[in-house]
Length: 312
Image (cartoon, one colour):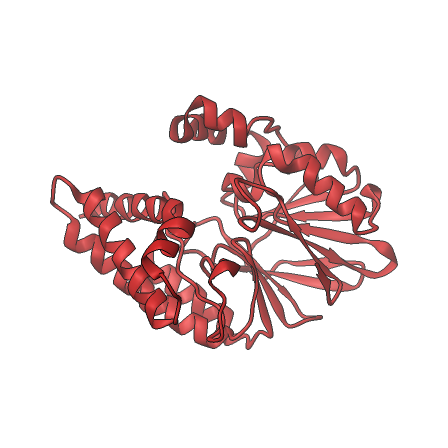
């Protein structure tokens, strides 16, 4: 899908329609890639770049909104295949791209060896000389098309979003939640926040959502999945849900079965939200489409509670 010189790339991570990268087209055939999927997705992404009519030598930039593996795991192999590209990364994430050993070890621990081999194998370090640090306000010049990097923590401390003035659109990674196209209906898009481990912070997340909406964007391009409009409506919903998710976690804290309580609470909240949105068979569809995200979100909320306890 290409629009406004933006091509959506389905990275193929886990299933179709789950994880997007974005090819942004500048003048003279130059291009930038925003996010890139996991290392196992790298060849699919390269094929999509070629299918979009962009030569590998013409990709000037790879911008990773944050270094979670579904967004940046493929950076190493892609940078080796894109000879003129420079990697743009948040200052808190840069070292993990130059030396991904800790990311790899963490992924093996979280996913297990079999799942790591299936979804994440092949991660490679990026040459430090090709890494550009994106402080808040950093502007990438894509052949006359400026791309502004704005710090948007909450999902992760090392998260930025990318403002494309040419289209008045954000590339928001995970800062503007999850919105799978299976839930679209006459009432528009349906979205929920993503609170995956380990740096979720509700106040930061709400502030980032508000920052994105305050720019009055025509569209927000998210990793999971594709493009949403009605940004103010969705932003308001996301802010409310962040508070409700944090409340569910707090209510479960101190119980031996805390994680199970949070999972149950999130599932009930999302079903309630889906019903209010007019989604038929909400119980079944939420479980089928959001089941994995519910588990990950519950883990992230648990990590947040543990961090609060350590700080008390």
